[in-house]
Image (tube, rainbow, N blue to C red; front, top):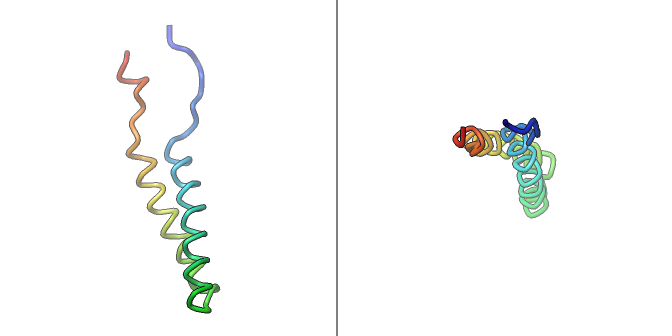
Length: 66
């Protein structure tokens, strides 16, 4: 019998991690160039997109075991 444990949505987890990393990189680039207002949202949006792609490619190994 399969356990009803919910591991969460892996695509959403990847998106959150991408947002965090993208915001950090965008802020660092913005601080270096003197234009945080432009680079921070760009880093956030690129991080969201990449995080969603990476999160959606993570396979759920529990489904293969059945």
